[in-house]
Image (tube, rainbow over all chains, first blue to last red; front, side, top):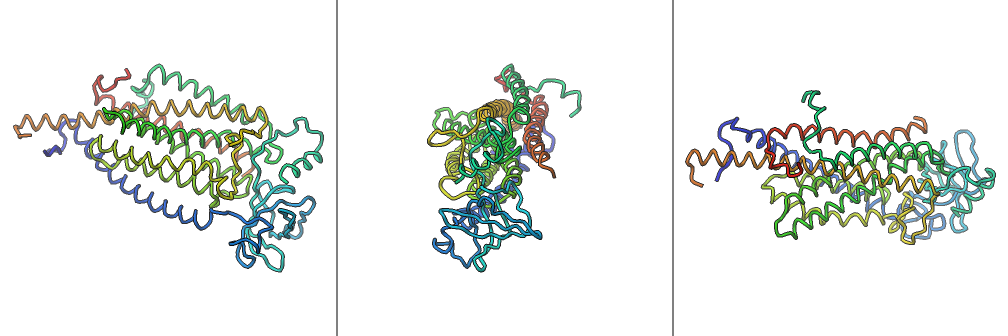
Length: 164
Length: 250
Length: 44
């Protein structure tokens, strides 16, 4: 049986019915957008997110880490290797006793420092990794600053040994 | 609505929700004091670790909300009465979960800019989290597709039971795939928590506060959804009565 | 933006949407209240 109101303005029914109809179309629109967004996310997941990076020792060794393609390389910044000159930062990252020279035009953001693992995005050219994006991959360990800690040097050494 | 009406307590308030609301506000203030002032900075991350005290609780409570939605949905499907109240609880919980998941993404993005140096990247954790978020936005849209209240309840309960499977995928994404996001610090499989005392306390306290906020919001929202359903039913009842009065055969 | 701004913004952005949602919800409840009977509110 048809329950739709015949005349506009019968009791409390009309505003409710019209608002549910509008809500229905809004929902269909959102659902369509959700399906598109879900497709984009899955595509990104399959193309980028799985195996987000290669470790330094895998460059040129592992499948998908070929030296001639654009790479994301993960390694720990070697102590004392950071040099900054003329707007360019160079440093050495290492993983599993293998080293890689990295050159980055600019000052890496985040909490970039020595003894911290980073992911460098870029290409390998003449054994130097030319990077246009540095991401700092900090650990899941949290240590309060200045608590039972003697000096900066000890903290730095401790940081290196923690991530290493 | 006029301002005068906002001084009247909302019709969804009970003693329980009022107390929960008070605890939520008080807890939030204490959490802010702990997170922004009393806890120390992290050795590596500095003060950006302070974002953790809102980022992690919102993420956990979003998980909790989605699991609660699934539990209520299962209860609805299994129960003989097919309780619409369970369906509305599921819906309310999913709404709050979507908000909290959105907050997780926003605070995580800001934290990422500070510590990684980027607002966003298609890393396994971030990608699966945004997928979970999008899924539950879709769930809420499914709830609004219309039909009778029982149709809505059944349809969305089935969606909820499928959607909840994504949660372990999100949580363990940092272990399953190589990720820029750090691994879990507290919810680790081996139980070895690597965090300093007051930091850990503040984090757990934050989870407790956001859980209270969640309960408070869900109770109110559940009641509002009950009012919405009641108004809809009354509209149908009124239409039915009008047809009967006109002598239309049913 | 300075470092501290990020932290303050992330905290504000965490609580503002929650407050807004709660406020909107209460407003909706007040709007609907006159349209229902007491029997529709089993919690009262």
